[in-house]
Amino acid sequence: MNFDEFDGEYVERLKRGDYRTELHFAGYFGELIELFLRSKISSPEEREDIRQETFIRFFALLRSPSGIRQPASLGALVLSICRNILHERWRKPPPEPEDAIPDLPSTGPSPLIIWIRKQERASFERILRRLSDRDRRLLRAIYWEEMDRDEICAREDVSRGYLRVLFLRARQAFKEEYLRQTGQPQDDNQPA
Image (cartoon, rainbow, N blue to C red; front, top):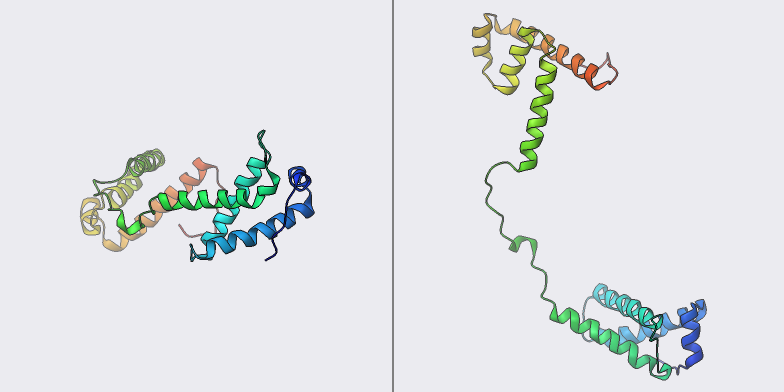
């Protein structure tokens, strides 16, 4: 690697955002940083992160009011910034792996789930009010009370086969009322 000397004019071109100077700076100091970090960090991704952070901090300093006071010491400044970032990373405790964080014991459904269930229940009840008594009883028994089909047959005094027909009709009525309330068009080809 050839070591370049830097002067005030070079720093001014960097400050102005001269493309060729920035390209030279990134190539030259990128290589210098890589050489410095290679023996300290094995991960190429982490070396690249540190290199990028070094450039970000350097350009922030370059464009700050205090700027760069000694252009001839540009290499030492860049490596000093890089070294500081490296020390910051070493001082920072490593993140805990996700499996090391214990799961909190479940104390039931979350407040969000409770709220969603209340909203669903309110919507369900609003639609049920618009249905016939029998349809309302059937849908509540099956979906909210989760009653056994034989119990429903006994309560409604119908056979299991006829309960199926009544249930399909109640579902269709519910679907039509739901679509009417939500303003969605009825799709006649879709089953209930």
